[in-house]
Image (cartoon, rainbow over all chains, first blue to last red):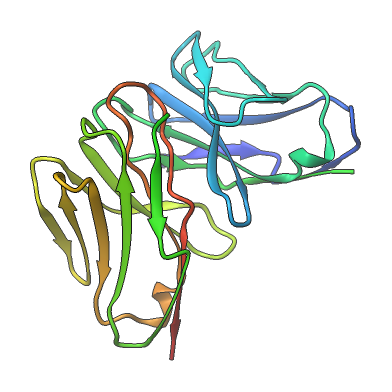
Length: 114
Length: 112
């Protein structure tokens, strides 16, 4: 089954404790990205990757890191989480962003930083 | 930067009525315009999309229209049903970079 898988689904952590949210897709998609969803602000792009070893900042990259060492995986790293990073996070992948293709979303990760 | 504005932010209709959500975009070279539906507690999923060489596309009760001159596109839902209640997002990927920015979403409520 074609899918994007995120883990964990729920996470409560303390300020400053490094964490990683994993994202994996099995569709051989080139483009992957991370979003955070907050009430009234919609889906805001954090980082995106056009292919292996190629990443770039989205609209709200501060406080986040990403890596793309393999085509299927695109982890989101919070080196020192803060309470303002409490949010619902989605990973998404698409075949080709430039030509415009459907984005498939993971099931979401609800992160709470206390 | 690229900008996608979506209106209204909330929309309440009676079952059976039509609903229209509009998005405007800034990059005149954008050529792909998708709409996503996010039900409560679930992930966004594509419901319909249109490319710039087409003015309108229909899929049963939903349709999307595109006005490239005015740089706006709209989602039309006819004969609304309670299961259409959700948040709807538009996107207009810019042609000049690889970002994928969404509108802020429209919460559609269909009252029985």
